[in-house]
Length: 341
Ligand SMILES: *Cc1c(COP(=O)(O)O)cnc(C)c1O
Image 1 (cartoon, helix red, strand yellow):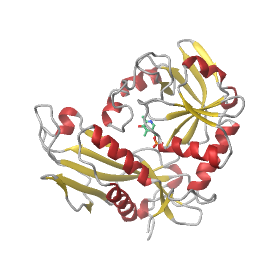
Image 2 (cartoon, rainbow, N blue to C red):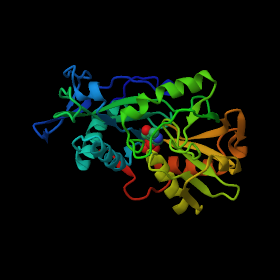
Image 3 (cartoon, protein in one colour):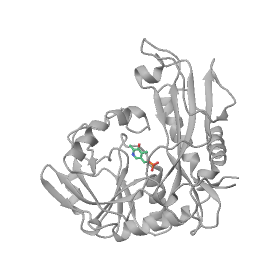
């Protein structure tokens, strides 16, 4: 397979059409067999459920080249399971988990020429998504759905080196109790765009959202979960039903316990406790971990002593171990690395 002649070292995080996408339609109560297509345009009725009532959910994961030249995907079964939860919550049909993983593998294989070679820190970003495709005008689930997977090559999240982020405690809420914060639905993002644009205007990199009911507990940012580290090297992460369960965070907690022998706590975190932590990081597929240097709560600056200038020592060990597992330098727990045949 000959690679495309892309400028691998200078890819940014933007959409670039690749050769093939995967598409399967749910019609008359059943998923069809699915196929690869080179058509990146979707043609559906103007009254489709996705347009009128935002009936859609998505996933995000990466394929990349390991040190020994294999193309692999990281824990696609976890994305399949998470999308199943999202589909159920939005009254959409479930795309079967085995088929999801198989479709991811097929799509990556068909776009192997776009998977960045080892060494650039670049990856093939995989975006599975599903939406109501048939017309609805009274509020109800659509009858028909489309499941698609698109891929796009992307560069490393931090170009020119990791930089510590400055966050602000947002006055907006991300997710309500018993709402949809724990599923990867487009609607959670639609209403977070104003919050992030506002944060950027005010000079901040990201928002820290608090729990909507009491505004006293740390939840997450618009697109990444928090991990904190205490003075005595305990890894602490917020527990809440309105946080999106990040696969990166779940993997990092496993690594903290099983690889690094660190104590791990998943529990409620009052905003008032944040000043006691020494490291903070944001975790998600895109960057794995982005260090947080400062959190500003309405003029009150909370500095993360050990992650003010780049990743703190504990965060760095977590990062190095997870990325080491991903590129095949460190032995992976069973099932974490799926080789694209
Ligand atoms: C996708 C997402 C994350 C990160 O999840 P990963 O599985 O680690 O990529 C965190 N928070 C929100 C709101 C998300 O949508």
